[in-house]
Amino acid sequence: MTGLRWKRVLVKLSGEALAGQQAMGIDPDVVGRIADDLVSAVRLGAEIGVVIGGGNLFRGAWLQKQGTDRVTGDHMGMMATVMNALAMREALAARGLKASVLSGLPIPTVCDTFTQRGGLEHLASDRVVLFAGGTGSPFFTTDTTAALRAAEMRCDAILKATNVDGIYTADPKKDPNAERYDRLTFEEAISRDLKVLDTSAFALARDNAIPIIVFSLQEAGALIEVLAGRGRATVVAG
Ligand SMILES: Nc1ncnc2c1ncn2[C@@H]1O[C@H](COP(=O)(O)OP(=O)(O)OP(=O)(O)O)[C@@H](O)[C@H]1O
Ligand SMILES: O=c1ccn([C@@H]2O[C@H](COP(=O)(O)O)[C@@H](O)[C@H]2O)c(=O)[nH]1
Image (cartoon, rainbow, N blue to C red; front, side):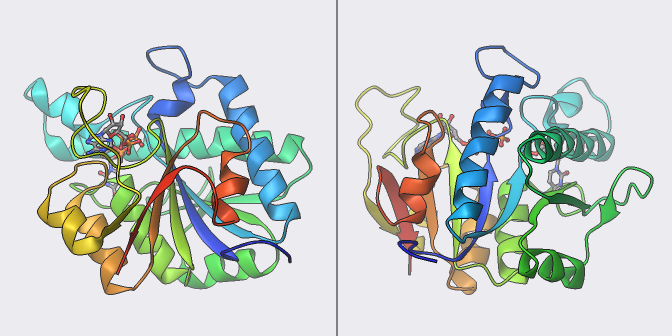
């Protein structure tokens, strides 16, 4: 392995970004482009775990707004993340890269159920591991899942690939005067309530001393730049 800042990483992919130019759904071109980046990263020697959000398909809070039970909505949201992981597994397989889907929400006829041992074994044998189904419990998010799996898999960093190029003083889609940070401490990210990740994700990463790098998925090759410790991003660390 040469030129990589981190060897084992947890890549958190925005579910929303998978929709591409559509309002919802899975755009195969976007999935394919991200799969290309993951293939390049593995070829450079990185060990990659992936958590994909579900915002392109379903979020539990949507159902709650209609007066339906939140837990049912969250089960649907977690199943959305399984769908995204299956789509990514197929895109990786089409490129000759072996990948396994391990779900925190047991769906045994569809994919294997997550165990720490299974995840570690797959990573050590150069398989990309797609951690689907969130934590398996309602009231959490896939950001918290990413921090949890990163700690369990002993990852060196969490790479949060999203549709903005870092963390800003306010949501840059709503505030044109928002300014981007290059670096933040965990305490600053939490106390300033910067929203791009939830507090429990920041706290889990802080407690396990795992840095979080937030960067944009829009540019092809961005993942490789970030893995090399370069590129436009915000680094959240101790
Ligand atoms: N302070 C901030 N800095 C940067 N982005 C912010 C900030 N506050 C809110 N955001 C918003 O956070 C979004 C990125 O977060 P993320 O990709 O995790 O979305 P998400 O809703 O969790 O996606 P999904 O659930 O589909 O994975 C951006 O679209 C951005 O508009
Ligand atoms: O541990 C978890 C993770 C996720 N959920 C539900 O899934 C959706 C999609 O996840 P996002 O992080 O919003 O992309 C989320 O809205 C929850 O409904 C969950 O219940 N538990």
